[in-house]
Length: 325
Ligand code: BYC
Image (cartoon, rainbow, N blue to C red):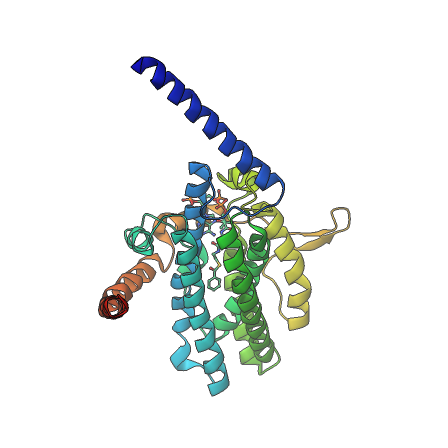
C-alpha cells in the first residue's frame, strides 16, 4: 500500500512540476512579468541573482573612480553634480540588492561573495581616473554604455529587476548628459584642456566597449537569458548600437575616437570598428586590471567602517518594533 502511495505522489509531483513549467513558459512568451511569489525554474532564479548581483556590485564599486575627484572638482557646480551622481550610484546599488532579495538572497550574502572575490563587478571600474577629464569621459562613455545596455532591461521578464531599471535609467540619462557637457566644456576650452579631454577618451573608449561583455560566440549566458527574456539583445548587438550612437557625438564634441578602423559601412548601415583586445578583458576579469586590488580593498574597508551604522540601524529598528508590539 505504501509503495502505491509513493508512486502516486511522485506522479502528482511530476505533473505539478510540468504544469508550473508550462505556466512559466506561457507567461514569458506572453510578455507577462514574473513576480517574486510566482513559480520559476531554479536556473532562472540563479541566473537572475548572478546578473543582478554583478550589476549591484558594479554600482557600488563604480562610486570609487569618480569619488576620487569630488574633493578636486574645479567648481562648486561640478562638485555638487558629481556628489549627486555618486550618491545616485549608491542608490542604484540598493535598488538592485533589494531586487535580488526578492529572489531569496540577502544583501549580506551577496556582499560577502563580492568581498571574497567570488562574484564579479563590471570590468570598467578597474581602470584609474587620472585627470578631471576622466570624470567627463566616464559620464559620456561609461554611463552611455550603461544606458544602452540597461534600457532593454526595463523590459526584463522579472518584475522587480525591470522596475528598478526604469528609475536607474532615468538617473543614468542625467549622468550621461553631465559627462557630455563637461567634456564639451573641456574640448572647447584651452588647448591643454582639449588635450586632456582627448587623452581621457583615448583611455576610456576600448574599456567602454568591453562593458557589453564578451563577443556573442563566447557569451556563456546570452542564449538562455534571451530565451527567458532577461536580456533582450545580444552583447554584440548592444555594442554596435553604442558605437553607432557615439561616432556623431564624438564629432559634435570635436574629439576623435581612438580607432583607425572606424568607418561607416553603407551595406550594413552601421559603423565598422577595429578588433577589441579580449585578452585584456579576460585578464581584468581574472583580477589583473590596473585597480582590481585597490577597488576591492577599499570596498572591504568601507564595509568594516560602516559596521557601526548597520548595528545602530538594527538596534533602532528593534526598539521601534518592540514599541509597536
Ligand atoms: N565585466 O555570458 P556573458 C554600472 C562576465 S554599468 C565583468 O555574456 P551575461 C555603472 C559575466 O558576468 C555596469 N564581467 O554574461 C555605470 C559572465 O561571468 P559569470 C554594470 C563581465 O550576464 C556607471 C561572463 O563574463 N551593468 O553599473 O549574459 C556608473 C560571461 O559573460 C563583463 C550591468 O551589470 C564585464 N564587462 O552578459 C556606475 C548590467 N561582461 O557571471 C555604475 C546588467 C561579462 O558567469 N548586466 N562579464 O561569472 C548585463 O547586462 C549582463 O550581465 C552583461 C553580461 C551584458 C554585463
